Amino acid sequence: MSRHRVFKDNDILTLASIPATSVLIEALIPRKLTTVSFLESIKDLDIIKYSFTATILTPLYLDIVRKSIEGNNIDVSKYVYEAINNIVTNPFIRTNTALGYLLLSIPLTYSLIKCSLTLSQKEITCLDNVRKCVGKVTIDLLKRSRAKSFYSTLRMLRPSYTDVFVGIIPDINYSGNIELSLFEVLTYSAYMDLIAKELIDGYPLTFITLKKLRSLCSEINVKC
Image (cartoon, helix red, strand yellow):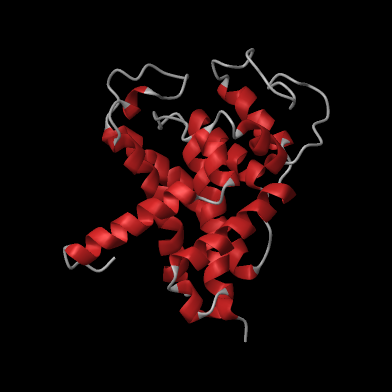
């Protein structure tokens, strides 16, 4: 019997809801609510308007969770594009685009579930083992993901650095056929972008934070 059958529908929904709603943590960062979509003024933006982002992201993460459980690969670039497109074109959402969060959380969600199905019960209790597995699965995902959709996402967002580029990968405005993988693009970007570096290095800061949270939970006698 394959291990994915241990997941019930409620389990899958919970697993998808966690990364979808965790985007709201960004809103708690000082001044984060001022970095938002180019589509509208955000002078009256508040956490209520921001929270609708989670509703849009939940179906996307549901699909990611199911594909991971079933052992199907995903194209990270396409999921990032779909999420950003849904966010910036939805008239009821006024929020930041969450590009960095999506780049981190999409492969992490997929990888954590896959690793939970492949690691033994003993291995999974050690965060170093989990991080090693997550890093390996993430790199494999990024190598399988084409950069074309990622470039389309960047053009859709029209970032301020569109015409400013240093490096050997194509500029954002490049209109030719992009054969690079997302892994290659992020590798070349990692020397100047913390999100790219976190992905390529296998989530070191993420797991350091997790260890500190576990330690804190232990100190205050709370189950994490």
